[in-house]
Length: 549
Ligand code: C2E
Ligand code: CA
Ligand code: CA
Image (tube, rainbow, N blue to C red; front, side, top):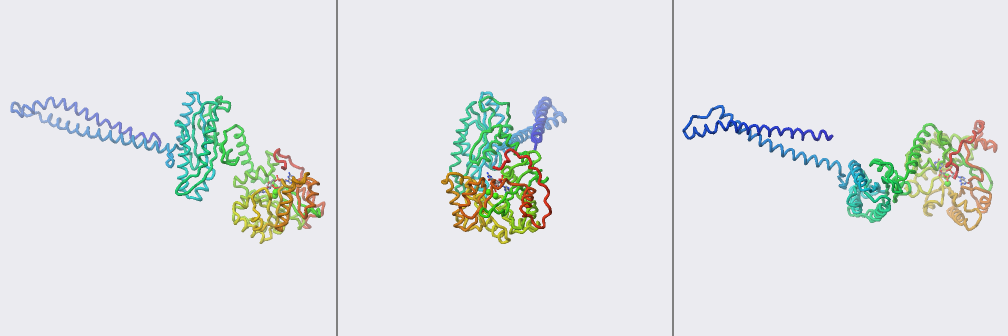
């Protein structure tokens, strides 16, 4: 209902006060007719005069009836109006208040912020807008149920309110998102920081809700209508403050949650760049801009080329060649990683079919892809469609896949291995794989992370980690690959450590499919059935952050 609609019945009721007018007119008529009829009636009763005029007497009676009717109608109407006013006030309150926590809602927060901004400006004060988001509310709901989740929200709201000054406004913006706005002396943002720190301490205390003890963390984004140096920036209204706090909150989440940030202009640029990347990735997918590069994998002892690891690159029209470290995490968040990975895989299968049948193809698989229980089936279907032998394929998964759902990963590894696909554990040593998981999960290979390999250069004490990992691999009877081998010195050290595969810049940078084909042609390692190799394309432009790290 619009305000206009809500007012209409009331206005009609108020107009009906005409009934009161009728009653007043009737009283006036009563006076007039009464003046003539009553003395006649009295004289007739005393026997000193004749009967009063019949018509006038009827008019008098009608007047009395009208007065009674008018008066009753008037009383009914005033009651009705009061009732409607009460209902309207109630509706207005309900529209402004969050029914669960009884604080303001998103709509009324805009108004409250504007009002506070005006009041604070008149007093020469600044205002801070603070956006709060629970980090793990979904898990709380999933684990303890929605009624417990609701109880936690109510308690959190009480804890926040307890810390705020009286004039501050607190709102639940929806779901698990809260906001408050408060005034503070210009230039004293440390007062807000102090409050926020007390808020973190308060929420760190466990919540007891529905006989359960729940722990939660929050992330916070802050914005102010004054610049950092205390000068009033260009006028910012409530919606700008909210938008900025939202960007600061997003930044806090990105930085690992459970922390707070004040908005600064770089966040806006970052977000703009990110939106540009998202749009670019979507377009890149539909225009096949994602291309596989290949890195050689070498048997250290024999020096033989044994296969390639496929590394994704984005040949973007706007940005040039973009590193997977930039676009893979975004594609994961956008829910596009499966599509992206499958597009690359299909191209890689076509490329690798031209290579000698003994050469393997390694493909990196994101933890997000492994959450799909049908991952193994989808992969095998693609292998069949591409007519690529599963024994030539190796997939690389990182340790972070293991703490998500080990059971699912185990089933997946088992079914892939049953079809002949090999599975290796990538970036080993950087995550949380336990020795027990290493023993239990049927991996075919461990890849030692390049951070340990680079430490093999120079002083021998730094090589302890690499030594330990190699010893572990031997103990578990798992073959090893050393990645990120950059020079001959490291290669020589690795050679002394026993049988290994190696890859890294010492053998050259990752290459395009055409460059690989040329390399293989020179070594006589193209598949006998492969068509003659076209000349490789010139190396494309390199995007600044895209250089291999
Ligand atoms: P990764 O699997 O550890 O890949 C090895 C990375 O190290 C590659 O970077 C490679 O170019 C780089 N590298 C190789 N040799 C050396 C060396 O000697 N020194 C140094 N400093 N670096 C070396 P790249 O291609 O930028 O890939 C980065 C990461 O992106 C990969 O790390 C992998 O985790 C991910 N990635 C790449 N392609 C894909 C893909 O298709 N799907 C998924 N999910 N992730 C991918
Ligand atoms: Ca890898
Ligand atoms: Ca790796």
